[in-house]
Image (cartoon, rainbow, N blue to C red; front, side, top):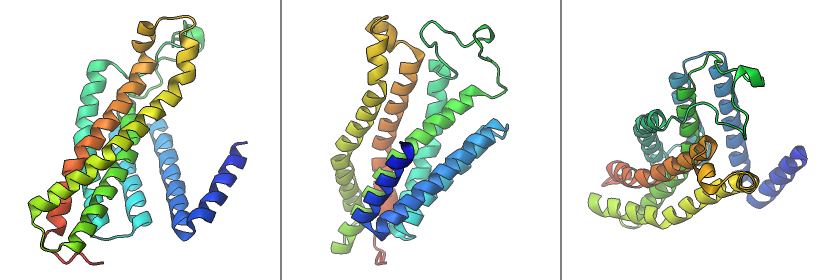
Length: 253
């Protein structure tokens, strides 16, 4: 069934978008490969911080440059995403440390312990793994927002080449605010969809307070909130970076 769905998706995408969609599909394949290699390297014991940083940069570069080509718009978007990822990594590490989010939660009444067939110590720093997970979740929203703002700013400058830096930043902020609501709603419905079945089955045996305070719920909720915060933070950063690169320059491709 999975193969059938993939084939249907690919055929419909190619029919609807042609060559442009083919690039998007190739980008997705590249990103899946990078993600699979990242998991394998972490499992083999490679440095989690370094491998995650390299993977995040490669995924960002592949998505932005391969799909949208190399120009002043994509360079601005790439730099914006990298800046937010660096800032977010410290914030994520702080949140994980103080919220104790690393590791596995309790599945029903089954604890992760040797007597239940689980190994507690697998030789991997789960705190760093959780940081890696949150960074990977964060990338998609950052790229979409940064590209939208930088592309929109580019079009504004093309129609008004005499715009000063403050006007460019204001335009970028306006574009970001317009797409913010849809992005946050998308994140919310992803979270709601993932946990709908869990909530229904969980509430047959436990209360709402127990569900909300469970590690599984908390991990996913905080991941969505970090993505939402990142989407907000990248709006002024993308606007500023775009203004630095595009103001009073010949931005024509």
